[in-house]
Amino acid sequence: RKEVEQDPGPFNVPEGATVAFNCTYSNSASQSFFWYRQDCRKEPKLLMSVYSSGNEDGRFTAQLNRASQYISLLIRDSKLSDSATYLCVVNRGTGFQKLVFGTGTRLLVSP
Amino acid sequence: GAGVSQSPSNKVTEKGKDVELRCDPISGHTALYWYRQSLGQGLEFLIYFQGNSAPDKSGLPSDRFSAERTGGSVSTLTIQRTQQEDSAVYLCASSVNRRDLNTEAFFGQGTRLTVV
Image (cartoon, rainbow over all chains, first blue to last red):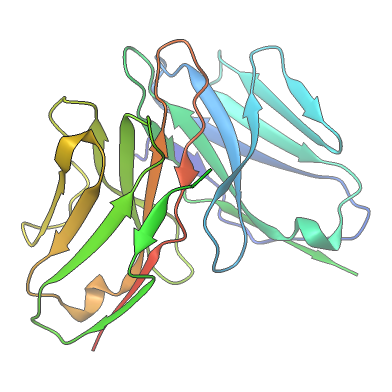
């Protein structure tokens, strides 16, 4: 079983739709969580950190469920420019941090 | 300020040759990661360096792959006797990596390796 698992998609949604991705992690000692975005043929870049209380950044909302060991990303009012691959990232915790990346969920927003 | 720098950006090599890929992390970043991404696939972890600790090599796919990090800064990933299945984009990332921080990893733009 992979340490961080994501549905690869693709998720095909029309502009304006709301879409949600989940990610599960297996290491209960994990301390920090992130969502990264990767555009086609580009390097991944941080989209947002995920805090225990949940956090929002404009149209993006991230939530953490430690009991069930999953993280979610909600995108409201999807834009064409949101089309990308969204990577779930988990820090293993306990001492120095090693970031573990999921393989990503691909989102395609169409007109 | 400079980000993570990787060189070369593109490399075409003949099967069986050795290649070296270079990564210059952000100054002061103690953690350095190498990943590999094949076309249309996710990131495959290769190796992780943290300060002066022994590297985590658990992701290296075979003994043809090795990496070193000199002086806690620049890293070189070496692939010996390259095979066509080694063709991929090799991504390097670095982070501050402290216990008390939600550390962001910054990626270089990658080296696109093509083995012909």
